[in-house]
Image 1 (cartoon, rainbow, N blue to C red):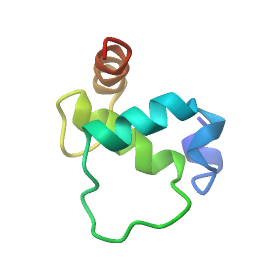
Image 2 (spheres, rainbow, N blue to C red):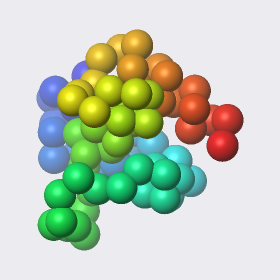
Image 3 (cartoon, rainbow, N blue to C red):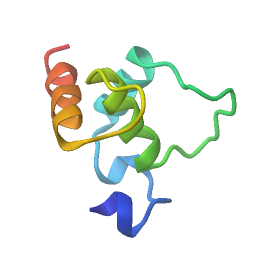
Length: 72
């Protein structure tokens, strides 16, 4: 829900620093621009890609991404 209500919110409102660091190491950014502030939508896309869907998040894909992230 936070992704919809405040898409510019920083990722650390929903993810821990460890989760953010792991996602940065496991999933490369699609775009060359690497802004200093990474938002929740940025990391939801990374979770979706980790969960097996390159196009975008769904509940099932986000769950798979979080499961994979927690097993690392």
